[in-house]
Image (cartoon, rainbow, N blue to C red; front, side, top):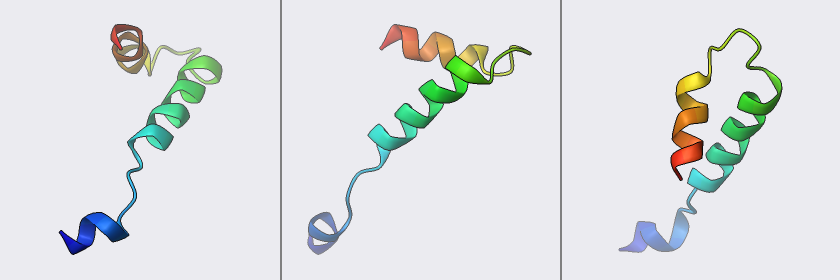
Length: 41
């Protein structure tokens, strides 16, 4: 329980970074699976 008070979640930050990669660095289609996941959300 003490860790809950000290650790902050980073999932939102990771998803924001993933969205940027999909938007700007997906010319080769390497992040198509991530793009599909983000569309489902």
